[in-house]
Amino acid sequence: MPVQSAPALASFPSAPSIPSPSSSSSGGLWDSVDGLHAWLETHGAVDGREALLLRVLKLSEEVGEVAQAVIGVTGQNPRKGTTHSWDDVGAELCDVALTALVALRSLTPDAGEVFTRHVAKVAARSLGGDAPAAGQERRAAPPSR
Image (cartoon, rainbow, N blue to C red; front, side, top):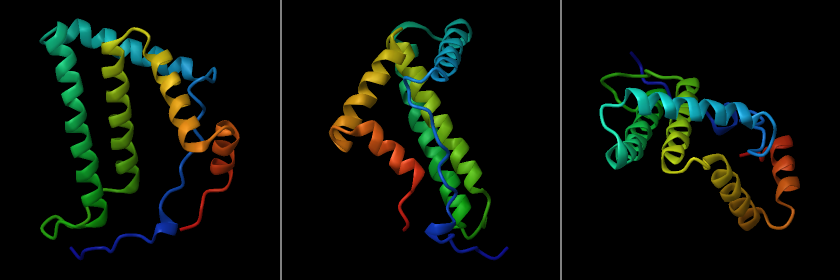
């Protein structure tokens, strides 16, 4: 199977518009995170501190799967060729994010509030005083590369 070259940056899939963590739709996200946390608490092989540590370590596994998908989409393994799509990369990134949120929920029952405060701090530091408006402009007109 011939190796496909990586797509030009302009052909990367565009990022979807994501609601802010404080929007009403984020309740569904945190309900899901709480449900997954509860399910893990009920079905996990270990509990307590060991369960928390293993959930944090799970992030490394998920990040490795992102790397595998990027290698697969770019065809960088000559033995395997092109094995993944950019949709696969996106799905693996979602797994990383969800795994991190469940690990955060395992650390604190106030995970949604902790995350929202942290996002606000990072946005203020990175985007300045007009953080929400700057984020809206960025989603409306992504920079060309």
